[in-house]
Length: 440
Ligand SMILES: Cc1ncc(COP(=O)(O)O)c(C=O)c1O
Image 1 (cartoon, helix red, strand yellow):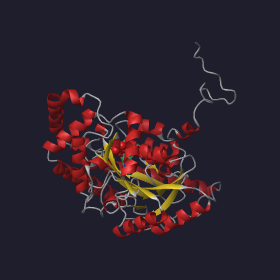
Image 2 (cartoon, helix red, strand yellow; image 1 turned 120 degrees about the vertical axis):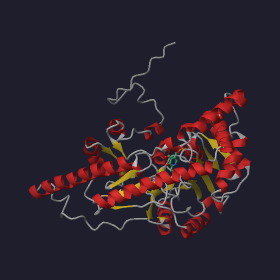
Image 3 (spheres, protein in one colour; image 1 turned 180 degrees about the vertical axis):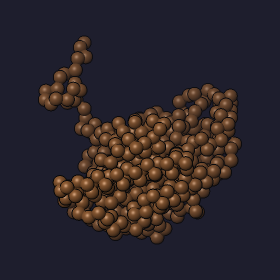
Image 4 (cartoon, rainbow, N blue to C red; image 1 turned 180 degrees about the horizontal axis):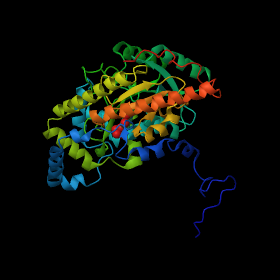
């Protein structure tokens, strides 16, 4: 039997299967900045781009001990397939972790996933038909936007300020979408130490947003990988702690322990959870038993609360270093000052384009993530996300100095062109147009 592909009837694409893909594959676009990030991962480049946790701060010996014990005591179970919902013992530990944030539940409510990224995928798969609308903050987590796009959802962004998602903007967005005859399936939100905006949803707004979603019949997808990584005191209680039926909550061990285990979880209303388990089984059969047992053993034997505290200290020092360097070198810009998490969101003068500027930055040996990555609608041109989680304080200072050279160079370049005429319309005046006040 021949397995020769049929050549495409039209188009110039060299992929012989070009006409064969499902429509949804069109949503799987390569990040425009991926090639640059390959260059940016060279050691001489200070990367303020990625969201990699500083796993070197983990007590590696305790992780190794946990792995050894799992293999010696439970080897055949660790190496075997397991339950699609996850190892019950780990689900108990997850309840302990969530109790720290005020969320209660039973072991049955929890489903273990391959990182919270998989939970995002499963929830989207369960709810989205092509053209359905997902409400999400403006900006929003790039990995979630990618998932939403791959299921052909329309993302409707909702404005934020220094207190997080704006309830009136949410009301407006709901009315607008419904006026257009579209169906809203859920609100996706990152209430704590937002990725990329760094802001935290205030307590009164949490109540108000829950109230809006309840009365409008809109499900909430609460993504909370950073909630325990606070600096000056914990954030307000999660949405899920006051609303069981209307909220799917996503958690992860990626930032509080290590992403290499690829273990996250969802806690969902009963009926949704049953469907999530079926969807997870069809996608991966079961999450890694080995990873689950090692995490479970680690949580049982190591002082994990102390270790999370260590992470907090490391990240707080780095955040303070970044904010101090920005204040010293780029005082005319504005940025958020997060009380936890990994990210600072910087606003450039509105005539600068952070994506166009990135090659120049990489040439200057510093990398950041351009703001457009975090919008489904092309927004964020004059924004950049800076991550302080991975580089050392020394590298952060160096990175911000290099970034300053790049930004000033870009401004000078535009000024030169402006003076000679061609870009006159792009940049009417030299000074920054009144920068908005720093958020957070
Ligand atoms: C807001 C948010 N959600 C989900 C994820 C995915 O995390 P993981 O799949 O490692 O649990 C990330 C990772 O950076 C994130 O920032």
